[in-house]
Amino acid sequence: MLWSGAQQPYSKIRLPQLTSSEWQAPESTADVEIPATLIYEIAEGDSLSGIFSYLDISQAQMYQVLEADYAVLALDTLRPGNRLGFWLDEADNKLMALELAFNPAHKVRFTRVEDGFEVEEIRLEGQWRAESITGEVHGSFSKVASEVGLSANDVATIANLFKDKFNFRRDLRAGDKFGVVRQSQFVEDEFTGNREVLAVSFSRGDKHVEAFRHTDGQFYDGEGGSLQNAFLSRPFNGNYRISDNFNPRRLHPVTGRVKPHNGTDWALPSGTPLLAAGDGVVTRVENHPYAGRYVVIDHGSRYRTRYLHMSKVQVRKGQRVTRGQRIGLSGATGRVTGAHLHYEFHINGRPVNALTAKIPKATAVDKSERQQFYASVHDYRKLMGVEGE
Image (cartoon, rainbow, N blue to C red; front, top):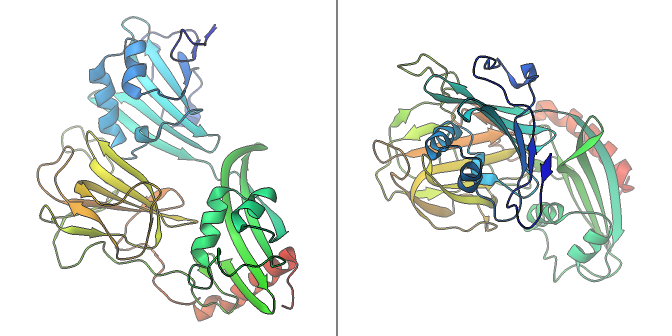
């Protein structure tokens, strides 16, 4: 039965419950066949605490889930339309599992174990379908871009790529032409909401500017020169010792279970200035019970960075930042034993070791990859109808 409407704060679908004797923690989400007891679709104004209270699930259990969420920081991002699946023990309404579905390609599942919950993040590659979008400027670029089907995120990406080449407000003229190659993600023919810009061209009279994404996720001009700043090797100045290394398979010293450490910890004194690792847009400024005050920066296409346990945040959500710009101060907020910075670097949504991963630091496409890059440029130009320009 489905409940919804003004008198009910949440949408609720009730399915057959299970007993604790029937429950078995799955090895992975793919093994789950038992349907959720309850499914909620998040509405404007909903909170995790409010949903748990409404379902009569204890706040203690919610905090156990939030402790596991420290590894992925998914539950700070609840948005209208997201779905929460609850698996409950009918005997005492004990939470056995919780699943947050962002879209068909991205889910996070929390599964009960003896001393709390384990978390698993599931990302499906799906199928990426490319399309070419062309247009001619008449009025503002953002208005024309919207008319031809480009999103606000697409426009922000394009503006960031060419910020050092020309001014979109001042330099574009009526009749200037542009082309964009964009790919969209589908899972079983269902659009996930994920899109990526692959190539852009502008023809302004006899002037042409272009940007092409290479296999490293960075954008370069047609000759292979970088259009983006490289990343800092560490997001602060000075030398500080590493207090805890990146280890996705770290074992809990008591339980022996895997409890990932998805970042690198540096023993920074509280108040040390923290710097944006690269150019990007601040997508999250949050305060988590375990992660403390933290900032997330999206660097475009494949890259994202996280900065946890900050004492002070000096940027706002939606703000564009440049490499080396101060974003706040280190601290000891959240559940910590002392002041430090927990820093994460993500590629394609997955955490990697920021000290050893292949992170772009070059100013041009490597010589060994030039032929492959030029072949891609040829294909992109053909799609945008700018061959030979």
